[in-house]
Image 1 (cartoon, rainbow, N blue to C red):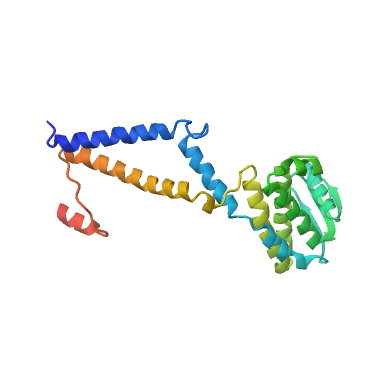
Image 2 (image 1 turned 90 degrees about the horizontal axis):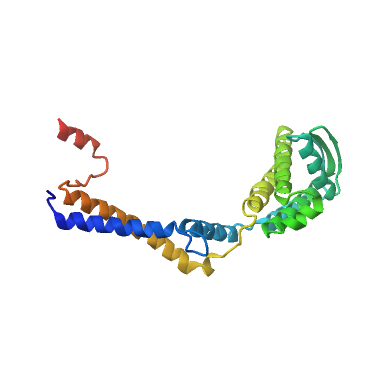
Length: 242
């Protein structure tokens, strides 16, 4: 026997509708993508549209033009060292390699300028241009910049040159990393997608609440009462059970 058939079947109906919407969301009905993929790409696009800091980093790094940098760093492999040498040579630096080691003698500001130029091109999805420039994949170019800057950052901090280490870290985090992560994603501005963003947020809240009420109706229909619990009521529960 079901104590409250109205609540039980109302809850079941709500769960059936919930499942139907869920099945639709996982079907490729949004330009060949399912709902989760569509929303994920939408928010990635909006995120990319608000994460373009490369001009700011270029402005901050301009004062380092004329700052000499002479250092030996170690890359992960000999191949990566040879690939990275091409990047620094493009900045006008003198570079020699020995196995996985890379000896650089150049201008810090010019090196930053070259890295930011590559990051900017990749941020705007010009991967073929970067690949043609260096002879290998554009994302690998950014990874090599990032890895070499990480090594330079460690060296400069060990030497107590924190100001130069800071600008390298800024270039990594605000230019190279976003360009790498957002490559291939079309940038959108939230003001242009405000309607769908608001709808997706309202839908998510309503859909979650709908599921909660569906479960509640099913349980109450079966005669199980849901007792509201106040915050920090654990001790009260323990007392009731004594």
